[in-house]
Image (cartoon, rainbow, N blue to C red):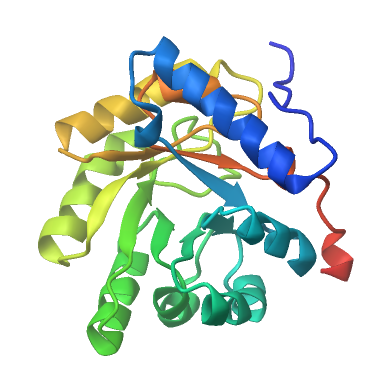
Length: 236
């Protein structure tokens, strides 16, 4: 299988990129007989400078995704002061010792993948009073280098986090293997969500979000298609 390419080539400006990506999402939704408003674009701002984020905010976008707690903690408080309706998603792996910071900073945590982390999040929520929505990350390709609960263990983790720990688990997230047909993984995630009564599906990135929409995605995560190339991690 050939490598998936971004569906939208970055244009001259971030507002144009946002408009183009949202138009493609809407077209994919209509083709799947879905309402375009049912799909949220999470603009992935990891390793992007603050000026680019400011441009996206000025264009009216409000939903963003970050991979690392520390990076988000350094960037986002200033924007929240002036734009309180920002919705910030954590889409990267989360260490248990960062659970308190994640609960205080993020509105949605998409990378809940193990019971130990669930316990840490439940404790942090009880102490802080904040209850960000949680998505269980499923390693649909069973790739050893990736985080995420294995599909065969997803039901039990969902039950433990939602029913035993009382976490606000609202959906699932996945990142399909780069060299496999993504539709198979999106269909699997949708099946797990349906049998557990979960409404949110965060799936689809720059190269495959139209496919994800066809399989029921409620959130798609697009980074370079919106912001262009990322900063070198060494300079971030």
